View (tube, rainbow, N blue to C red):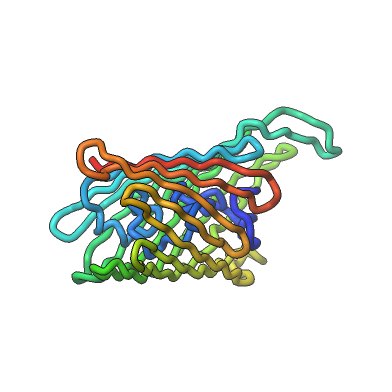
Length: 301
């Protein structure tokens, strides 16, 4: 699957969720684990939910090459005095997969979709520290086959009023897809494990710039001789910068491992000053599959 690339992390279960949660995240190389990513807090780092100002709604649509698309929705709200909660939904789809038989002849055109529902909760531990937890349900539909899975994410967040942040996030502490596959009138059960991803990041503002740095460790889990073992750890490094021009316009760029990223943003007002934002990111592709266009909208309700 081409849902995630660059370093060899795209062949593991749940790769679509590692593309990026929204256009801003993709434009900033996915280096936002230590950012208060308004509109997409729960997906970026559940521990950042405590910084939601009002009820927030985030919408995303990503038109990707090879007839792929990715849609997202995220809602966050505060729970006084010190907690917050969020609901998120992501869907990846491809309706034009050409099926082939065992000798390579074309068969039916297949449809694929992969969905993730997430419920998140966060609470403050002090004025500067918070923790968060996300429970995720994963559903795959591929032609006549389907699978369901479950995952848990955990986050820690340290925030200073100056905007300097540190964060730690552990994705898929537990999680796997369970398949029941029927072939030649026989059925077998198969488990596809989600890789554990440990992310550490920082956010550093300076004048009208904001710098982001993040390091991920991707730890695959493999079923071997009826036991679950860990594969080779894959490191992923991310660097990014965001520039704010005249308080309204945003220019972003970064480097995800060796893949450059780029995007733009525009703040505008509906009910309050700068309470909404539209973001765009150009996806250059990580496996020479072509370019994609990503859009996100954020509203403060």
